[in-house]
Image 1 (tube, each protein chain N blue to C red):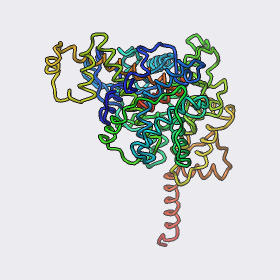
Image 2: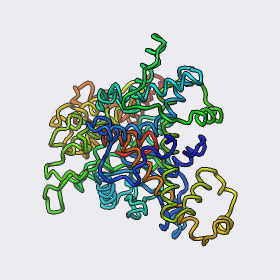
Image 3: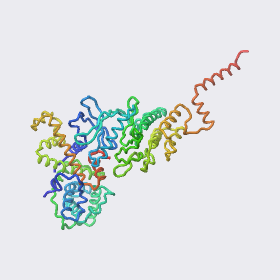
Image 4: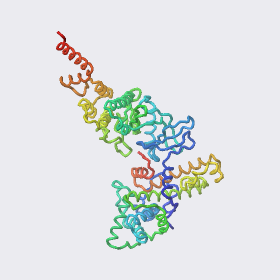
Amino acid sequence: MTWLDDSALERLRHAASSPDLEGTRYRLIDKLGEGGMGGVFRVEDRVLEREVALKVIGVSDPDGVLAIRLLQEARVIAKLEHPGIVPVHDAGTLPDGRPYYTMKLVQGKRLDEHAKDVKGLSDKLRIFLRICDTVGFAHAHHVLHRDLTPANVMVGPFGEVLLMDWGLSKLLYGSAGRKVADRDGSNSGKFAGAPTTAHGSVLGTPGYMAPEQRRGECPVDQRADIFSLGAILEFLLNDASAVPRALDAIRRQAMAEDPSHRYQRVPDLASDVAHFLDGLAVSAYPEGPLARLWRWAGRNRAWIGLLLAYVITRVLLIFFRPH
Amino acid sequence: MAYDSNMGDTGRFPRTRWSVIEGARSVHTEERQRALGVLVSAYWKPVYKYIRLRWNKENEDAQDLTQDFFARLLEKQLLDRFDPGRARLRTYLRVCIDGLVMNTDKSSQRLKRGGEVAFLALDFESAEGELSKTQVSPPGNPEEMFAHEFARSLFGLAVARLRRECEADGKGAHFRLLELYDIEEGGKELTYEQVAQRFGIKVTDVTNYLAFARREFRRIVLEELRTMTSSEDEFRREAQALLGVKLG
């Protein structure tokens, strides 16, 4: 048997796990990370002379489920043309038989890392609204993400917010409004069931998964994504010294145990957050007259200041006017 | 026959799963022997090194314990008690080794070999040589150390099998390119032209041959690994641990 030292072992490990790009237009540069079903690599597109990201399934997929899921992911992303979704360039099969797709190489930080650098609450909420905008767009095209977490959101150097990893995404309806098959290849024909592996384990990220998704229940609909958005909001509010009541009410409504108690559509959730940012009333937080007055005062600080300054000046003029 | 390279080699494995667990539980002696052969070829060095390092045993004691361990595997039907739902095969074997060493320490006795299991022809000298060549720190995490040695053993078997298959198919140059780039790291300083000249092939064939050899190496590693695991789930987890890739 051939003796392998540690460095040879590492080189062989790398050789065995790296995508075989021989005969393709791509040249391997390095590995960017691991996704839910395989690796993501930085490669050079030798034809267009640019770097792109290549996603490929793991080295073994005997039942073909991962291959189906990867192709479906590429198709879902290709269908969703939106500034918050990374465009797909190409899809195919590598010489080693593994399916792949390439997409724009995103330079930036994952939200779970980026959030530490964002100090202001309003800046965090603006990022959150961008995420809502993308998820709302996907829902409008009948696509559920089903794995919304801060780790699946990238914030680019110019503030662009991109939603990544659509590997668990699911198409709710076909173009004619028909119910369609699961994106994970299970072809149940049911309405958007919880994503599972071939061995029946529920897929998703604990802590961000809606209770009904965690339990593997059907049906799972857009309200499962709304729960995850609530969990992302909670993550963004984690280091806030005091969370305003109205904002906490929004979070709680988004993360309600019972889907019927949540926001029913992403635009409703986004609208409440935008209202909060503008100092307007939010639907999730019924306020009393005093709270309403206080919010109104906060929203009209400048006018109230001017009015007060005017009143004080008039009073002073009355008292100190020379007789 | 030495258990260093050929034992357990079934040539090109069939697509259907055959695992050492099934083999070891077979009622047929031949099948059990074959399963043990596969297990021995992949595990004897990790077992020996683990006993030497984790239990700090002397050379001869470690040799005896290694022999005892594999004898017990078959004679005591240890693999019958393995439950894939509770642990990986690799973890189970390591726990069995720990139990064997502890019990032997208590009783200061060795198993009397006989029956189906003969004294195994294991090249302990080479294992000792490897130990001296490797910078092995005292194992802080025995599981990791055992897993690392298992990976070394499995990759070594895969390289040996790749060499045989390439030579049998008249593709010796393909294997030697993999050897040059991935085992000896000698290709780094050479241009493709120099490598092509050395191997007497076209420049364009250098990358083609290398890609082929790597692809075959990956296939063999996964086939060997599939044999060493008892379920699809365990296979996926082991592949992730071995190759650092998630298989879903």
